[in-house]
Image (tube, rainbow, N blue to C red; front, side, top):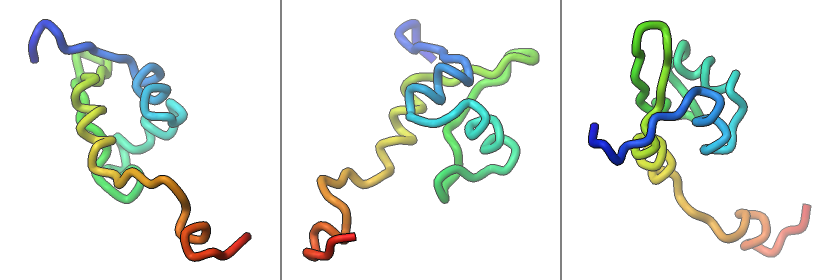
Length: 77
């Protein structure tokens, strides 16, 4: 970890990736989030912290889409 790394609480990390804090807490216990391994975190005593870079890496594994599959096939739902 470098000095430029930002450590976020569970609530802050969840907001950053667009989820609820409870979802992120559950993912730590279950070992899955959105069908993949959840973002890495650090446990410092009883405090959990996420590095912003680790959250960015976790988000980067998901494909960026500009429209839904239904929209691209001309189907309206």
